[in-house]
Amino acid sequence: MSAPLASTARPRLPRGVRLRHDAVRDTWMLLAPERAFRVDPVAAAVVELCDGARDVHDIAATLAERYAANPVEVEADVAAMLGDLVAKRVVEP
Image 1 (cartoon, rainbow, N blue to C red):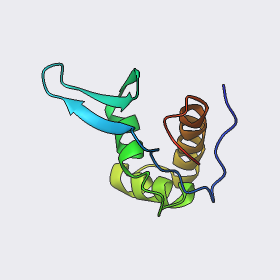
Image 2: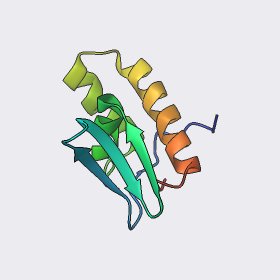
Image 3: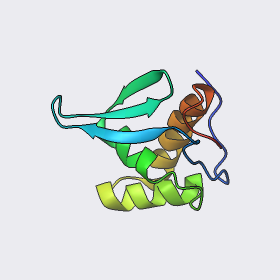
Image 4: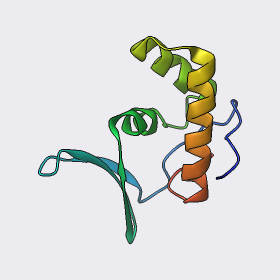
């Protein structure tokens, strides 16, 4: 497991990486050159907020409000997930 992303990091998708919904399989896919990752709907909700303008804290606050969850727990989970995606080079910090 990778190190969690800092709460002040402003994650974004690097050039060539796209989040797409596969309607045939009814699943979300994170597509990168020569790689593809299936992501669950919650991970897709996190990735779609990675626009380089919001920091990890803002992303977590948005999701905590959307899902009526504890913001502290959401931020820890989001930071850990984004840290893993940075290690896989499909998200830039």
